[in-house]
Amino acid sequence: MNRKWKDKFIGSRDFYRHMLGIAVPIMVQNGITNFVGLLDNIMVGRLGTEPMSGVSIVNQLMFVYNLCIFGGLAGAGIFTAQYFGQKDQEGIRHTFRYKIWLGTAVTLTAVLLFLVWGGDLIKLYLNENGGGGSLQLTWDCGIRYLGLVLLGMPPFMLLQVYASTLRECGETVVPMRAGVTAVLVNLLLNYFLIYGRFGFPRLGVQGAAAATVLSRYVELLAVALWTHRHGEQNPYIVGIYRTLKVPRALVKKYFVKGIPLLINEGLWSSGMAVLTRCYSLRGLSVVAGLNIANTIHELFNVSFQAMGESVAIIVGQLLGAGKIKEARDTDNKMIAFSLLSSFCIALVMLMISPLFPRIYNTEAGVKAIAAGFIAVQAVFLPQNAFLNTTYFTLRAGGKTGITFIYDCVCIWGISVPLAFVLSRYTGLHACLIYALVQVGEWVKCLLGFVMVKKGVWLRNIVSD
Image (tube, rainbow, N blue to C red; front, side, top):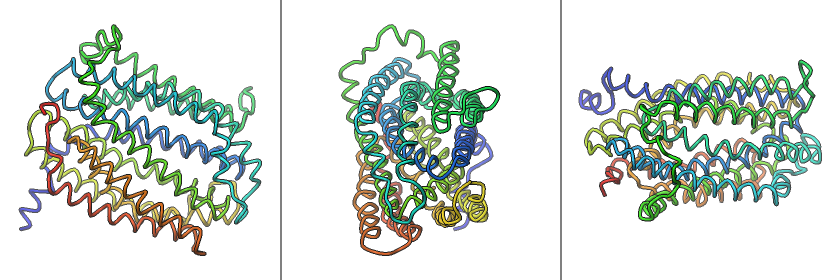
């Protein structure tokens, strides 16, 4: 029995070498990005509670846009990975062009939304209860930050088109290198522009926004130049802009598979924004504390996030090549690896939970709330690792309708109503409400386990 379990969930050295060859570059890029985001957050946090909270609120809103881009491009990306498995370069060209059209539409919509209603959206998170600073100053900081960060949306979109296609074709090192370069640029510009060092103007939150925007242009330039200069390694990029036409039949095919992912990511991320809004009813100190906790949480999340993306790439390529049995076996081992490693990471996160908030220049109450949130996030980190890998498993086989139910129905049918009721009709502490919302996702864990075990995702959608 033990031997059978080992064969099912433990891979060979070659298996882990291949898996980590895909996952580690993604992990490094995301890790460095999140680490610099952490330093960025600390730098802004040194300005005070209000600037930190204002930037945090805007980033929560931008998170919705970012995930809409990821979700929209991921629909075509399912086909890209399977086209690559079949060595169909023209198919990859079609998905690349489709990504440009879809990404442009999403970006224009988001920019218009933020220009018209950005100030009102920020106000939703500002509540008097619990203190924590000046609401007007927080709103002013948020507006100033938002005004500049909008300029970074077009390069972010185009960067994701290039980087996602490279990853789906097995090239993860180049996006990693570009990401490392960009975050170093971001870090230096943050230091110069937030505090006014070395003759640069002291811009505060606007300096943080300017650094983010400029670093995104640097990253886009690095990825795009490499891709076009290495046409022999990326045959699909040759002549990619001779036309932006995509056959109507393929547009329909990509749209049918991709729109549930776009809607899913949009609704899921907006659901997360609503959850933050519910927690914010306990006051600005909770907004600040949750922002501190989420910063370190994202840094620790990079391992299982990278594993999720690797599942989509590796399993998607196997499905495209028609290796159905190997795809199932690989998926079992990758889920097991992600889950086991997450327990070790959670332990480290739990140990630093009371220490990390001390870095920030904010009130003692905010630091205590942040420590509570970090401890809760650490406890539920293995659960989130499992949810992430099962989600990408279902997505690899094109089961976008199921992933929609998996994510959106659960968050809007369970998590949001639970947080809404607990935040408005009880006196529970925000950290306890957060923990109970995480418990509510046990339904989602069960659903993911059943769907993956049934093998409903084992499909070659390119051939279909």
